[in-house]
Image (cartoon, rainbow, N blue to C red; front, side, top):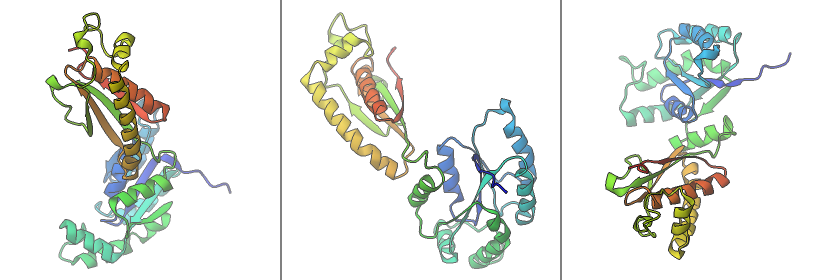
Length: 289
């Protein structure tokens, strides 16, 4: 019998408490998944039907399910069998050694969902035992005992979503210093030392998107040297950010008013990044002020 292909547009993340389910959920959310935490098992079949309707327009979904739901270990196997008649979700089960889980709970100072009057080790052992059947149903089992948060994110990129590995969303924002630096900036570059078209009468009312303004700014050894070093710096940093699991980066480029130099440099940087297959978005915040 031919094995059905798993639909990676619908993920179910489950496993032991403290094993990294929140990290997986945030990772998937960064990749555009609509994530839901602790949806009751009995509601999942109805949610699947809703998700499949064209008018809903939710492309990718990830459900985080675990022992917090009363009777989860008994309910979920039959629910999974039911929804597998409709779709073939990928079920990811996370686990870690008892010692690792105890250490994590000790460091976080959060109570285990099954702790009650029991010790943490008693709760961990009980949960592991109760989830044995669900673990056996999983498509992928990940042991996070030796993984940091960054290690887990890198593993997920390599193992489950190879087509997405190495991707980063880059926003380039031009701005005027007189209106303030964008608060969500990761990197900020000041272009106020470059030739200023504001002082050239026939260029003053144009923006940095105009070819004549661009020619004026880039017809300067200072600008060419700056751009060369900017490209080298950004080219060096991006692989480092990707390696550390960063999924979004905002590069802000400022000049005095945000109309000429910052706009032209942002456009040039955006073109350079596109040529290198990076996914970018450019926003000229103050161009019309």
